[in-house]
Length: 528
Image 1: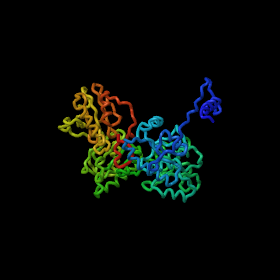
Image 2 (image 1 turned 60 degrees about the horizontal axis):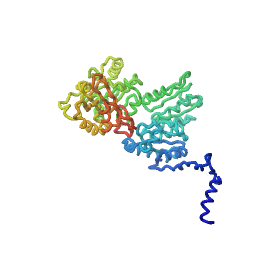
Image 3 (image 1 turned 90 degrees about the vertical axis):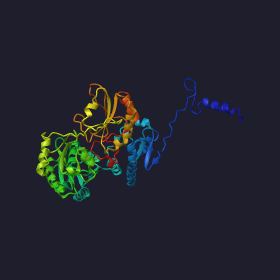
Image 4 (image 1 turned 60 degrees about the vertical axis):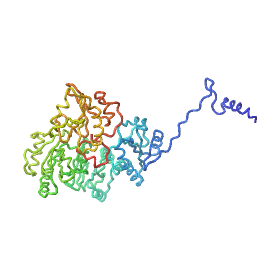
């Protein structure tokens, strides 16, 4: 065919609609519909799917159960979580569990971060059955086995079905704490409530039965949740209310209260459980466990505990162990042991006995009753004002000069409340020093710090570290809590705008109250 005729024929064929693209209403050729780019197979790093806006949809289609971490490359807590996250993926892969772990770089994928309302890093969300719109917030631990167990209880049964005494005994013997729900009808809505709670109580094994012989074996005649434990009373029963049914909140509080030892020794392993128990009143006995006379006091302390179960948590602090920050928080020295202290963790008010009498079951119970009855006044710590408190760019405040400096009507005062042992306080120290240096010539701006473990302010309690508060000039005595990013640039913008935060950006996950011990755990939370 003549090469010059070919373009003409092609044009005529196109115009005739033989390719399905005839002239449109205006006579012009219609453009073909724009094809979506093919979805890519997501890459993997250390067993973790690396997702983007282009690959998330395919991952949700392929994996009915998908846990996604939204992280930021600059986030220290995300870096700490990374090896645990990969270990969790490996544990689940070894079990052939039908669940995958994935991650999304939030700053690199702002559309996804916005779509899923990510305001802090790391944030983890659990997607089921390809549901793109209603993921479940991750609420579990931040170490590998905890992450894996949280997922196991969502893709598998959260409680073991028990059919006979042998199965029940095997479950009870396997763990220190086991909870069994005895329900005559397993289709009852109370069973769903029980199983929902079991999904999140990861440090406890759960069983479930409707077998009459098991009701009889354990002396039950009605629906009951029973906590079995290898210490203290050995067993605690929670009968299901026949009219109101099973309340998940009430059951959760019951299990937390009765799974605690009557007396718990404070250390890095138990500290989180102590504060998770949601018992606000704590009685602490400070002893030196290496001394026999001190150890002999534990029996009387334990004897007093049952009468306050659920109301006061009894805690032993060994002054010979690595508990210096606890001593400092209560204004104590190791040589003062044995001694008692009482604290309400919500108000942070502390109490001490009026005298240093012997620690017996009678004296312990009397002290508890006196505090609970409002007969004992709280005490407050304060250091002496250092002679050079105002010589450095960062001014040193204590309880005795706080009021004078913070509420000076001619100054805008920005104060860091810190704890000497707090890792995050140490991390932000260079930025705080740089801020003070930057504004040292501004006569109306004061940058200061106060050791909140050694100085307490009755009208301004501090519940975590570091806490940053801004006291603007003027007679109003206004206090603004700073919750932005802890860096020089954001601090400066905050000061320059008169105490207003710049547009909010995702930050690292805010933190847990004192006196948990984050430096001994991988949980990615600042101690606010």
